[in-house]
Image (cartoon, rainbow, N blue to C red):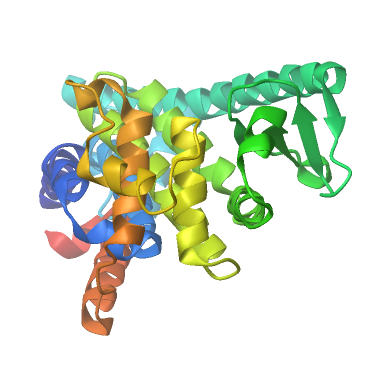
Length: 324
């Protein structure tokens, strides 16, 4: 168990810093956003499991050679008043830290869910007052505002897509269909659950820079996934133009406006200050200048790495005695 706790600690450090930074800087996720999304989830889950597991295995080391045996020993100490001479101060501290971190992560996840649910409920109440149902598109609400706006509001059977009449006045019928398909893809693929999980990760560990990188990366990937779904139903050029119109609020020549954005001419002197525009440029670039998808071997390697990331800390937790 001694070596298992140290290995888990080392894995936690790798997954908390270099691995997310490397993945956030990689170019290949745009070629396969689904695969990249799985890898991001694996890094987040395995990172949290490794952090908690390292402290838990270290704290339980004197009580048994595996997790089940050690937990039984801890139960005897806590419930049956078994002498705890085998547990030193360091072990008690490690167990306390593991318990506190677990409680913190779970509590933050629930608090984030409650906060997001409350925001959506208040938002829906406002929409009931300020919007009207679309006559041509089911489960779609229209708000009177000149700014081009398009988003989805999850809510199970009550999920809706929200459009502004300013946007509808700018888009052609096919472009509007592209926007609707894109937004409904967010709902059908339940992207709001991913956003909730990574928002909770960032809220729980705000001191960890990579939690912000992960949230930004996931935000971009879900947009790419929705774009890929839209391309299956509408022409790619139509989707490109629709994205550019939503981002710029104007309907320039079909072949010119997206091109200017991809080349960066519509970005201010400090592009990092506008993450949304940067995300839009990345989306347009992968559509205007498509790259070949990952090969089967590359996809398998990424998915195998994801599976390995989840398997290793789990095995080390359940049977750390196997590793010394």
